[in-house]
Amino acid sequence: MPARISIGTLADFPEGRGVGVIAGGKRLAIFHLGDRFFAIDNVCTHNRMRLADGPVQGLVMTCRTHGSRFNLETGAVVKGPARKPVRTYPVYLVGENVEVEVD
Image 1 (tube, rainbow, N blue to C red):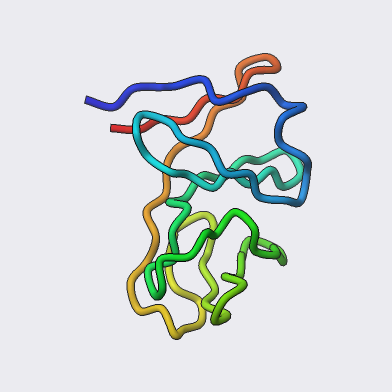
Image 2: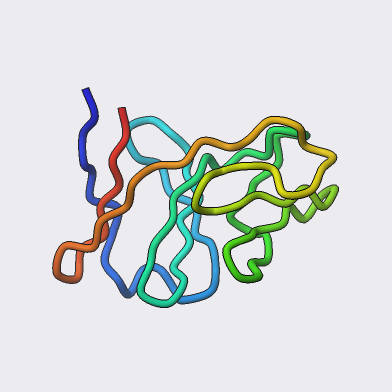
């Protein structure tokens, strides 16, 4: 059953950058873009490298190692070499607290 887990406050997630967190035993990359938050698995499906460190342009983040690009809303591969999408998770802003829903 999905559970909402507090992962920090708004101040913990600088706008325009990814931050790696562990929630419910899962390694996640959290991205704060404008008034929206996105959570994806923090592991590239191509080479198992961290995704939180990758640059973001619009709603697409890029893995620094081989350049795979993923849509932050859907997890879909926008550009390979990755072929499998990353999993996405709902994120909620409750006052100043940031929560993610994991199962």
